[in-house]
Length: 88
Image (cartoon, rainbow, N blue to C red; front, top):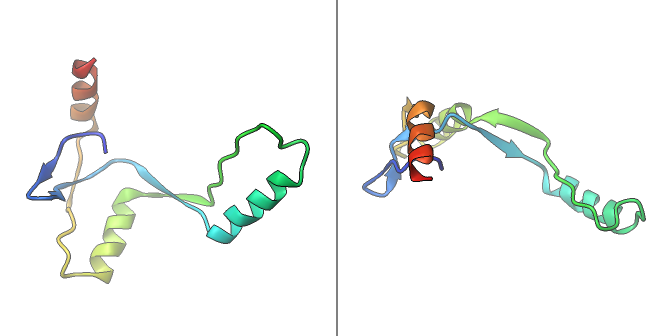
């Protein structure tokens, strides 16, 4: 992700971002439509069914696997922006 926040092999902070999901059957259907359509020739398409905040993904994972050590604190985006800007 954005910041170097690895400690002992696991993330310590939840990134302030979203996770995009799509059903593999929808992707397969999109491929079939793309190869059978002259309009789609040479173009690129992105298949996304929805976006879920990463904090919701981590919450679900921590409930499904309570023994896992999921992060509990949100990442500070301003720190990430500063580190990206200073790396340029």
